[in-house]
Image 1: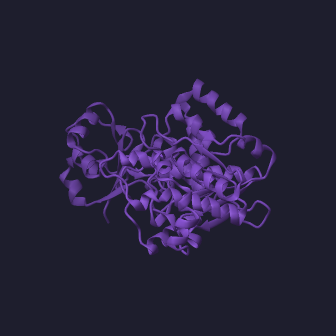
Image 2: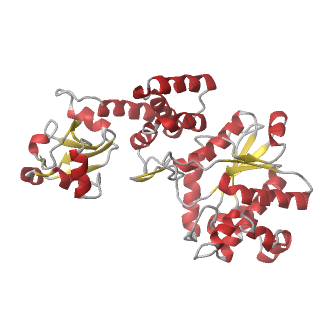
Image 3: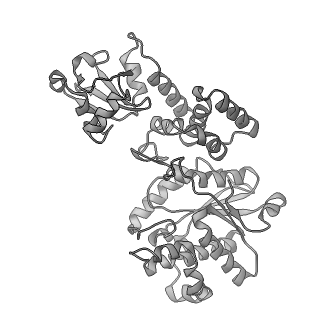
Length: 412
């Protein structure tokens, strides 16, 4: 999981109790699965006896971190940031133990100090310790300077603000370690330099690699959009399906990064993935474990049971209510009786529901056997959907491949 770390950190973590922090950008009221590795970093730290601090950046969120961004961020209002901070705080409480104790987790908002310091004091106390040459060498800045849009002074100052956060946490809580994704290395080392200059103390940094899918795309992005930790944005069933669809080439890495399973268990799942990949046991364990962490054991069990019912062969006597429960979190469209009486083409419904982007794509997938109606492959591109296709006179389930579904529900 480690991409880079400052010299001597491993020895310190092995023999000392360390206080460490990670910052969370409140650009939305929910974290997404791309943030999950970061959250797990703090949770692992606490499980080994160290003290975690989560900074929810109510102050820096008003500025915007340029790291990994090709364009200037849209600035949010103070009210929006406050709402987002509350949402992120609730999600972090699922992973970290905030009860009183010698290594109880803390959540702090950097607006507490950034919102009160005046500009002149900030420039005098922190800004004078950073040369422009030093800041230009940071990848988050140099990459933006190479773009057509460039970088504003507002975002250019972000590095100094984050460094000041590290200094404040050192002074207030004895925090000596900052962690994050590899795109944060420049910001982290800036804080380390500021603590060294002002407090004559060595602080440390640790970063993990940025997760990407096997195809090289950003982790946590699907055709349907971002996969959120908020059940209102991404229902538990859809969340479970995201992890269940993990490719064989990635599943063991994800088990190591996103679960607390021990090494022998993961080794056993790795052996099974190599000898019987068609069983997808590693994927099912991954989906169950991560969904339980984020949404609780009950929702994980419900998603697993629903997935099993949904993707198994349906029997003619299976109650429609049972199938509807399994499909509760699957995207759906209400269809009038008259539309089904017309028996519109299957290609129409595939594009209308967004399962495909065009009728030509729908035709190609049908011909190749990649489209299913009620779990049965359809190979005639001229097929039409009507009352005859209703499952127990209530619904029709369209499928793109075996795992992407959309429900047509007969309107009351």
